[in-house]
Length: 473
Image 1: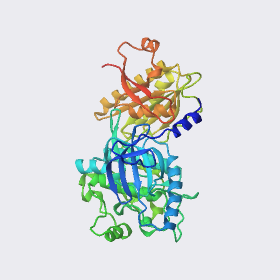
Image 2: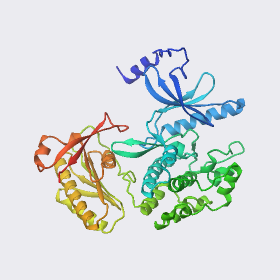
Image 3: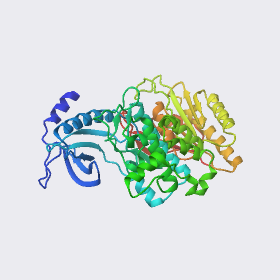
Image 4: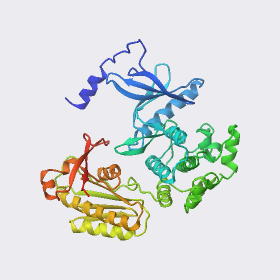
């Protein structure tokens, strides 16, 4: 039976009605309980019938709109929803479905995610250390980089729209929510306003000057909001706050934000941090950091963090399910990305790779990507990783300061990067399919492998099983 046949059959299945007589939104979604409310509508915990899958459904109201406004909103909603559905990124919430209900309400259907909003975490924990705040914002910027590449501007970036969860052994894994008011830009990257499209859209404390003025909005508006997120994570407050919304707007338009050190004096000890914040929050969009990629580089330089999700190596056009004639990828990252002697250390890493028959394909500050010519060469790649781990430990002992390596090994470059991200500090994570009895026999007896769980990756058939390499003392 073909996929089309299956879809045809499913299309004729009558959804099971709710037991208490409630109707199904769009004929499929049973709204169970509200998860949150906002000015644009309500987000519900829901069950999708007949699959019995739990989802999140955001219902957007059209109450009070004229017929003409309703038609324009409907056209814009479907156009924008299609654009958002094109985003496939680990830090962007997947959009499952969208449509219009029988009573005329818009709805978006998304994955139901565990975790807490950044706003809840900040309220609970107070101001964050720079390393943690930078790690969170780096992931937000990674999501924005993908959205902006698709010419989509979020326009409502705020702590309530940043979900923090757990992935593997890592906390603070970011998912960016609520692209529901995102706007697709034109080919030059800017929204072209007209008399009928000018509107103030967003949350006042996080809105850029151009949003407040209703002028053209481009990706730099999201970077302004990202700067306010960083400011709030570091200080526990937004730079412009007031009882009256108009006073908040005036702050964005006319006033300089208080220096970070006014609220947290220790932040003055980070060279370049205040200058970076000033570039994020420049009133003139032309004076801001130009794009999310540049923002990530600058943030990592100031905070001394490393995120291997940046500048992903290009994926080869090979089947993810065949090892035949496929090269093996090793991705290694150092944390923190700034420390004395790192260039020398990475030169030694490159030697370790070469001695095991591999080739360094890419090298950036704090990151190295190597290729081994055949996928069956997992033993040399693992040996190289062990040697790199040993060198890093020696350097850490010389410096008497924290210094850790993370390594991921897999046939697919994108999955090797994800495994590197999932690796604990000082850890080496390998795709389970690369480790068989022969590999174990070829390695020293002190080396063993321990299951680290599974990871699901969009576009990959089935979960990726992970093994952590443990080398004893």
